[in-house]
Amino acid sequence: AQSVTQLDSQVPVFEEAPVELRCNYSSSVSVYLFWYVQYPNQGLQLLLKYLSGSTLVKGINGFEAEFNKSQTSFHLRKPSVHISDTAEYFCAVSAYGGSQGNLIFGKGTKLSVKP
Amino acid sequence: DAEITQSPRHKITETGRQVTLACHQTWNHNNMFWYRQDLGHGLRLIHYSYGVQDTNKGEVSDGYSVSRSNTEDLPLTLESAASSQTSVYFCASRGDSYTDTQYFGPGTRLTVL
Image 1 (cartoon, rainbow over the protein chains, first blue to last red):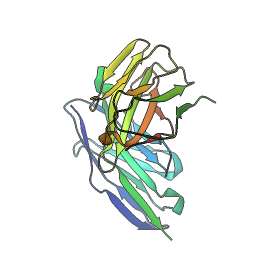
Image 2 (cartoon, rainbow over the protein chains, first blue to last red; image 1 turned 180 degrees about the vertical axis):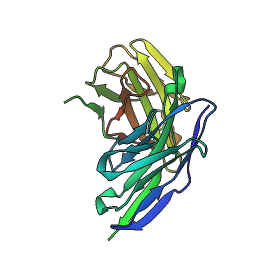
Image 3 (cartoon, rainbow over the protein chains, first blue to last red; image 1 turned 180 degrees about the horizontal axis):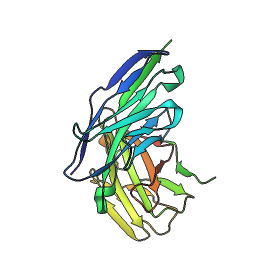
């Protein structure tokens, strides 16, 4: 079975500062990795995903994430955040095949960008 | 544009009542999912379906049921609502590949008094 740990439940940061949201996963098989964002009172939308190939993945809104197999991590980064990035961010993992292909979510990290 | 909708968006009900939450998608996806979101727990899978007439239990399925009679709809039923089922419920759908993006509805906020 797979599991996901998001190490920070809340991350406050000032506008235009860089940010890193941490995600570690556990799995005995190869996985796909995802980051989703949830703006207040909305559903989740995909930011980016790692399937294979280059370990640095670029997503929407200037976010990027790096897959590190040896450290089983998939941290999300943005070099300069905006007020509009205030949201909750979820890391998710899925494995190959059957019900293992279903997404397993972390508990989320609330990013709060202050002016 | 294709979309996934949920209704109602907000619902207040009483303990013991049966409640059905609707989910409708126009992506023509075979795979559909129901999650609940609770503070400190993230999203947890309730039920999922890989196609018409197919339904499967997820991590937190007790007290919930689903049925899939067509591709577009996956209604979630709470057979006898309990206060522990107060939550925000999200429906999602995905294409046939595990690498496809999973699209989420806007959510239904359910309060059980």
